[in-house]
Image 1 (spheres, helix red, strand yellow):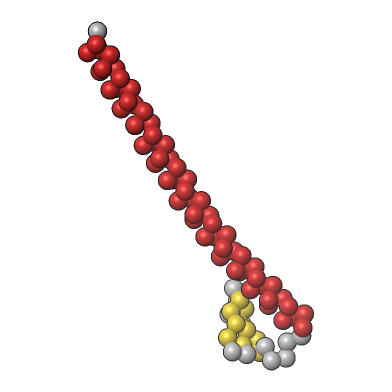
Image 2 (cartoon, rainbow, N blue to C red):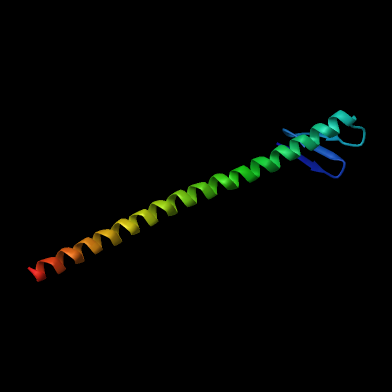
Amino acid sequence: MTEQKTNILSIDGKEYSTENLKDEQKALIDQIGLCQNEINQLTILVRKLDIFQKAKEGYKVDLLTSLQNDETIKTMDNSKAG
């Protein structure tokens, strides 16, 4: 895990001064930050996917129940007519 504080970079429990970093090292820090942001966004999307999959299943159950209720009412109506 990478954490940046004022002029101090902490990686895996070891601290580094950021004052004298090479441009390549600064670019790598930016890339790590970008990757972490994307990981956070994807984690949120995975959670949303789970929520919507569960909701879809709930709606499916509600629909099937409604359809079965309609079938029951139709069957009852048909038995009264005969």
